[in-house]
Amino acid sequence: MKHGFFAVALVLIGAAGPSAPPLLLREQAWTASGANLAHTLTHHQSECLARRDQQIEIGRALFRSPALLGGPAARAGLSCHACHSNGGMNTAFLLPELTDRPGHADVTSEWASATLGDGVSNPIAIPDLAGASGKSSFGRLQVASLEQFTRNVIEQEFQGETPPAQAFDGVLSYMRALRLSACPAEAESAITLASAADDVRRAINAAREADAPTRSLLLLSAQDAVGRIVERLPAARFRRERSRLEGLARDAGAARDASDPIAALETTAWSTRFDAVIAQLARDERRTYFNEPTLARALHN
Image (spheres, one colour):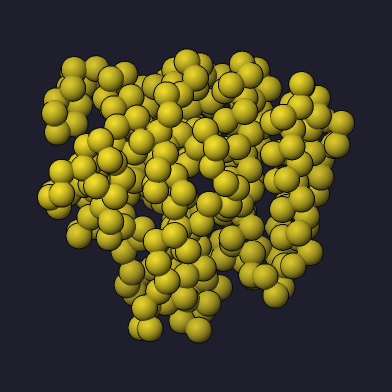
């Protein structure tokens, strides 16, 4: 699976119109605009994860990575998480190529799939995946197993390559660990520097015990997660920090080709350097696009 680092939908999907807010984050390309845009881009549905183990952590990282998909969707930076925010339903999802109404997606879109594209716009409501383990059928076609349904989504709906066995099992394990009974009291949670950095660390940690093909995908996922942090750092104020993070991303990419990728990361003190940049940024987080008022001001400039 060869997808470029920092695959940004802002370029591939199209520039904003003259009356639209400036495109600052890739998520804007598939997020319904409006008065609450800054809030929507700094919050997401709370994660209903009942437990954590190695396979679930593998799946969680890949669920958030464009590397699992293929075709235009992957090049635009879409992931499973884009439609299913933290495994739930992204009610603000509004990508013109896939839907004409928020919270819906056309699973037979010609834009996403040369295999299933039917030339008809017929978006359906994006389902919440919490509780998927207790269901007996899935999707519009009522597929009888979560395994086949997920494979169809990756390989047919979004033209992705067949995932390595451990990677695919991890994605299934993650979805099965999403339980309504595990949902936090708060329906939504803030997207913060700490939570974004945690996504990077969890992807790296998951890679430590993964087999070689899955480890490569996880390091690609970590690269992309670093890129999502970079997007939220205004260039004029955070030029140095952006450069350091971009360097870390390149190092993670180079490690994918090493005979022992994890040893390669440890040799360069990758995690220590990453933590140092995050600690420095934390002191000025209010000036980043993790901060809702800061993002709101930038969107209205």
